Amino acid sequence: MKIEDIKTRVDELISLAGTVLETSYRIEGFGTYVSSELFGRFRSGSLSFLRSTFGIDHPIYTEFDKKVNTQDKSETETGRGILIAAKIEIDGGWLFTVKSLVSAEIFSDFLEMAEHLLQESYKDPAAVMTGSVLEEHLRQLCNREGIPVEVEKAGRLSPKKADLLNADLANAAVYNKLDQKTVTSWLDLRNKAAHGRYTEYTKEQVALMYQGVANFISRTT
View 1 (tube, rainbow, N blue to C red):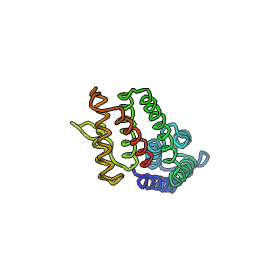
View 2 (cartoon, rainbow, N blue to C red):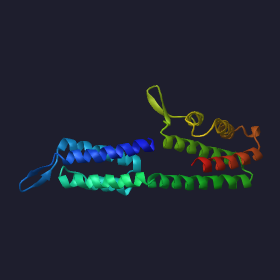
View 3 (cartoon, one colour):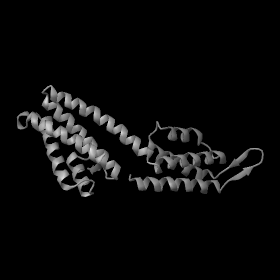
View 4 (cartoon, rainbow, N blue to C red):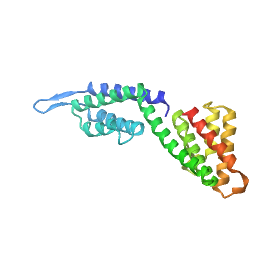
């Protein structure tokens, strides 16, 4: 989902909270409540959005799930407040900055491992590891740009191959055609290593691939 779609959706949910609150009615001696049907739509839609956007372990998701459970008017107000907090994080870019930093740290760890393998002359596992980091980076770029990372085959969704992710990203102008060709060559080298065709490339070529992938990730993160 693109950032624009995420911003639109959180605004829709905040607006829905207002609509729910407009249905409020008081039962003397018990409290003030809202439409159960609209509240159900509000709660389920908000939980789905917060889960897919922040994850189930994020405080924003857990707080909403814990505190917005009944059609009591005050709980809808609480839910709207939590969504406004989510909107502030999204509009400020904090959500995606944190995700990018986490990804960058993970990629850095694996690339350091690949570099160590190269230094010890283990070119083949270094090529596989570097290529795996590259493929995951392509997948995350697609997620960031709203490009599907799955394709339907025989009625079932399957992960797209790295070459198709690469083509989709180039077609969407996330990077240029020259980058696409270079990524294709790196993926080809990774596939040779993964399938035991060790004599078809050299340690020097793996070293160039490693440097190129590290630079590519840095440029496109």
